Structures are given as C-alpha cells and as structure tokens.
Image (cartoon, rainbow, N blue to C red):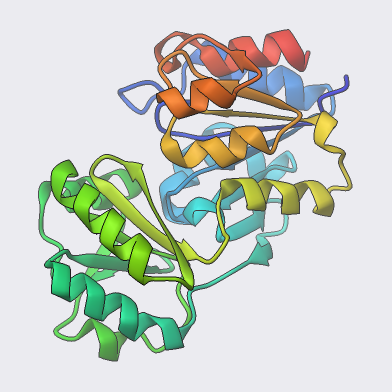
Length: 267
C-alpha cells in the first residue's frame, strides 16, 4: 500500500447533504485502517463539530488525527494531544474587530466548545452553531472578552456582503489570512495558515513523503489541501478551483466519492 495517510474534508466530501457518513464510505475507510493506513479529517469546523465522525469511525482507538479550524490545530486522537497549532495573537484582535465593525459584519471566535460573539445573529451563524453543537457566549464587548490567542474568526452573512468584506479585509489585514470557505462563511485565520500547511505539518510529524498521502476535498478552503497531497482528489461536486488543481475527480459526496477514491488509490 503506497498511500499511508488519507485525509478528507467533511462537508461536501466525507458526508452527504444530510451530514451522514454513508455505510460504503465507512466500509472503505475501515478497510484502509485495517490494512495499516492512517485516516485524518481536515475541516474548518472546531473540534466539537468533528466529534460525531471521530466516534463513528472510532478514530480515537485507531490512531486517527484531525486538522481543525482550517488548519490551526492538529490533534492526535489516540492521545488527545495537540501536536501542532498556530493562533491569531491578542495583539492582532483589535485591528480585526475595528475593521469588521467598520464594515458592519459580525465576528465569531471560539474557545473549546463555545462560540463567542457580540453581534452574530443571522441564519448562517445559527447553522454554524447547530452543525457543530456549540454553546454560544454573547458578550457586550468582544475586544474585552478576547484576552487570549484564538484559532480563527468567522464572519457569517449573505454572499454578496461577504464578497465585499473579503476584498476589503484582505487588502487591509496583512498579518492574517482572509478567505471564504463557503459563500456565506468568511474566515480569518493565522497568517499563512490553511489546510495545506497543516497537512504538510502532519506529514512531517508522521514522517511520510508527499507521495504517501491522499487528500479529498470540495470547497474553496480545500484547494491548498488537495494541492499538498501526493494524490489530490476533487469530489464531482467540488468548486471549480478544486477540480482544476486535482489529480483525480471522484464521484460526488452523495455517491461514496471518498470511498471510491480510497478503493482506487489506497486499497
């Protein structure tokens, strides 16, 4: 088996539109792990939002890993230890909040299983909280609340609003990375931090060559992930930039695309 590590995004990739892990996908992952492979999940979600799939795949007992917060954390699930992390530092928070306030867009950040916000109250924020099963802490002053480094900020809103905010914030914020993971999610992460960087760090940690890694994704925030693997797999339903840089296009997330890619390249 030349592929020793398989990494998959969750939404639009590992699970279907109902957020369910298909039995045939699970079966392919199980067989890959039983043959000695390592399976990792890479997501923009916080750790809490990945728990369901960690448990379904029994990754804590099978040597799995998660890349969370769009790359800001790598956790060894067998020990619970964070083996790599990068944060937005406290000194950067004021500038981020000031610019967001000027643009009239709401910021959310995270601490453990809690989403912390002052102004977010739209349907996309509710989606984020619901999917990830997060508690919500509302504060009267986000700047006073954030006295510690954070893994990322999230801005939720209508796509046309976030398109303008992304352009403005990308131009003005030079010490962080700004990008949209979904049309209605605008992410602010540590400088030069994404899923691709995290995948390379995980590869180093596991002492694996790029050629021994396969990664699957569908969204804008998966471009770097797919590019950083020896075999980069785009889902049939992937955004155009992912399809354009992929080595292989598998079936959709509704039709066992990840399982089929594992069958083709890793079993």
